[in-house]
Image 1 (cartoon, rainbow, N blue to C red):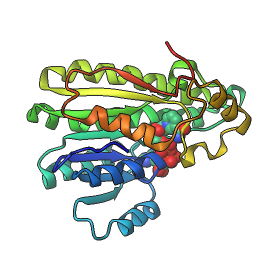
Image 2 (image 1 turned 90 degrees about the horizontal axis):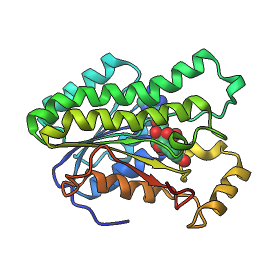
Image 3 (image 1 turned 45 degrees about the horizontal axis):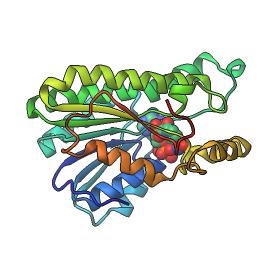
Image 4 (image 1 turned 180 degrees about the horizontal axis):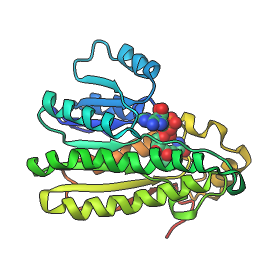
Length: 250
Ligand SMILES: NC(=O)c1ccc[n+]([C@@H]2O[C@H](COP(=O)([O-])OP(=O)(O)OC[C@H]3O[C@@H](n4cnc5c(N)ncnc54)[C@H](O)[C@@H]3O)[C@@H](O)[C@H]2O)c1
């Protein structure tokens, strides 16, 4: 893992109880940041609070990012407590594997609500403060499926992740005059609980197709996200960084 310095920066992470979220929390705390994380299940937030019970720079809250009132209340509370928000990482997401024929309206709405609507309204909720600060970093987590469409993963998942790439560009345009950058990363499969149900034959095929000969590790994604959060990367905005070991190259 690269060595980072985010001393006293206020970092907001959604999906904090997930595989990527947990790694980001650990690395940002190690780098000196003040971390506000959320996830939607009480039990997983309790577990996080237990892990970091002696860490004054860690704060966790139950927030369902599909519920706009919960998102707004959470962000207002952070702004009141911490007075600023330097970095936001939209890492919450779900990835169903239903075929196109199996997709119901309910599934479509749920995937788009969590993966796309949630990321939009979290970003909208923080943008006012970032504009006032004249500083900020927002990083969205897209997916290789956002470029390629879904095959193993469901079509609504792929559509939501394509939407994320566009969302990053829209926010990047709106916030560039204020010194705020907004970017996305588009990982191929990497080792978190999300890919526990990923068909093994497809995973093996992706690994063998990748120029690097393997699928991703959590730290591959964490390092790219932290790079985009660094104050030095002030001229990268509206970009999507592919993290797929060269599975395909555009
Ligand atoms: N793991 C992969 O292979 C992979 C590949 C490409 C992109 N991604 C993306 O990376 C991000 C992180 O995923 P991960 O791999 O850590 O998966 P994960 O399943 O371990 O974590 C996702 C987290 O999002 C949370 N979440 C789900 N619905 C929520 C809601 N309504 N409100 C708040 N939180 C909610 C879950 O509880 C979970 O903790 C996701 O956006 C995912 O789509 C993952």
